[in-house]
Image (cartoon, rainbow, N blue to C red; front, side, top):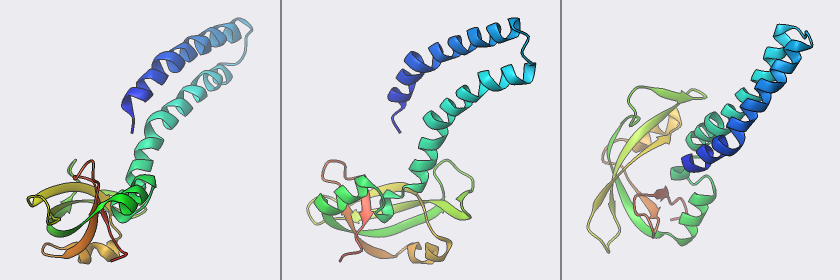
Length: 162
């Protein structure tokens, strides 16, 4: 999620749009349009902008599960990443605390110990959507193959090809 991009869009599109909608709303009031129609014409574009700039990117980030190999970034890491082994140290509530579910599937925090043979062992903590039926596979002590991003070793993807 690119917060700077969203803020720039708000600055150069959102705020001017709100002023234009206020002018349109004022003009419609002078022309004696009904209050509910004016409210609808003025508020719908603002709600749509909030949805597309803030809510949809958050939802996409949670459902585009890089750790399980979904999305462009995961494909890049699987293709160009370094092979390593991950050991589950902890599985629990997401890093924000509390229980979050999407389509009745939990978003959980995994703490992994990564060993790639070239650098010192290190820990990675990530929040990921895990199917309720797959939670048992990620209990502490579970070991599996991963690919790590060469540029950012904190980004890991399960390597199902090995």
